[in-house]
Image (cartoon, rainbow, N blue to C red; front, side, top):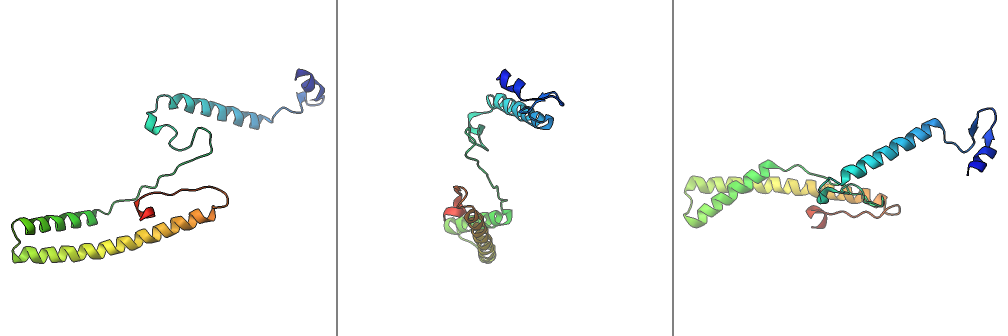
Length: 147
């Protein structure tokens, strides 16, 4: 190899024609250092977290979308369920029955709106995934994606 480098030297610049440009070599060194740093750090990362973003062979990656929880819906369903339990176990007075009707109606309305938003989100995700069907194998998961 040394012979081929010597034969390819540019007399005016004093370096081999196959030498990478300084910026390219710097990029290679930075990438190598980053890789080794990550590799060493990965040995101390818990097993369940290793390779969470990309597979060891670099062919598979994962993304996770965390959606916010609608606290109002959770509060309404908790209140509704508590009233239903009380109705079943000991009965409700007239004001509690009215409150149950109001809470149940409000929950139904908000749940219907949340379902519509979820449906639209699933449609958008499927649309985006569909754009790349010829370039990649993409799998989606999650409760709203399969129901």
